[in-house]
Image 1 (cartoon, rainbow, N blue to C red):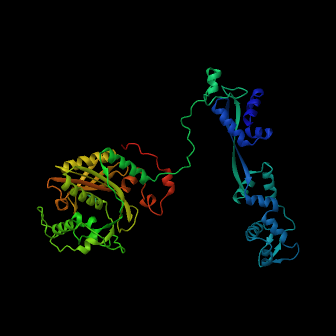
Image 2: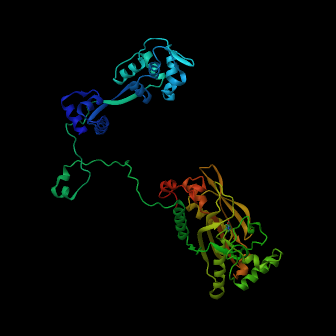
Image 3: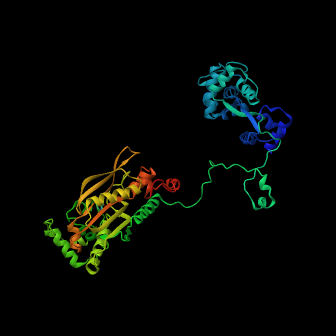
Length: 492
Ligand code: PHE
């Protein structure tokens, strides 16, 4: 309707001088007229020029005085014509703000004598403020000095009004041409597709936000990493056991029983059931031996290994506990059927008794990969890591010698982070020690290269999240999950 009003008017008139007046004449809301102008302008039906008008309008306080009179006059009128009134008495008649302003303005105007008693100093006053406010309300022009004083008292403010003047544009027509938005079966049958004008595609238009479920960035990352592992020929290990025995979590990994990580400050131990039900006894015996006195070319740790320590249940501190179980199984299978090389991976939750901060949680997810084969070297490990991390979008790697009780040599993995402008640690790796592999029963020449990293770290880096607590835990930011990208470009 607004659109047709504009087009029809321009058919017989040179211009619409002021969209505001035009809207009022047509009885159409100005906002609607403005929208129609913008749209017609977009299709070159009209040309338009901005008009800006600045007008003074009353503030709420100004409106109130325009209706009820200024505070100073209200105050003056409340003072008796003859004699005086006690200030307390007078105050009771007003609300505190009006009383305060009234006193100060009436005093300034020398209308009243203020003391404990208040009396009039003049016979009659004029409510100039109210008169001026009413004039502004009616759209009349008032002097600059008056404007300034009303503005200073915050009774009026400047309002900018925006409208347009409108003329015919290069594509003007008295009626807007309708464009087809779809090519239909009817168009094809009737043949009018030959003459139809089609609306151009707007490739910049945004689709409506979809109200649907959203995958958590950690799950998206997990899927992506699983895909990478599978493409690299890895099999997934079953990780469905948060509760683990100290034996598989530590002892089988040649981690001595007095190691600080085995302290309750670092590890959550279970109260019930506090100990494990069963362990493979002959293997336990070989693990005890290797801790106490070594073997397989090792001197061992030379301490008294305690079964009670190994029996203690805990929340697994790393998924390497799963790797140790799987490798033990593989070694048993090797004894029966001969050795088959394997590539295994897992991604699941681990627990550490840690103080929670921006980058640490007491539970997080670990990604773990291992390859078990004859003749593997550190060179293979570096090569596999480079391949793996490149697929995750991290191509610039550096390795730093490190220490793990179960690997030798061990390497921390660093990647250069363009965004942070520095090298950040992204994982830990190494070759499992003979003290771990030999008691399991592997042939001597079988090597295992392995690495582990947190799932949270690359997720935070790739999704640009700087507080781990926004990502995971009870304070997780749902908005962040909804707005996180559906997929990340550059990951293969
Ligand atoms: N378990 C190590 C950790 O928790 C990671 C790791 C896995 C290191 C395998 C070497 C080999 O950080």
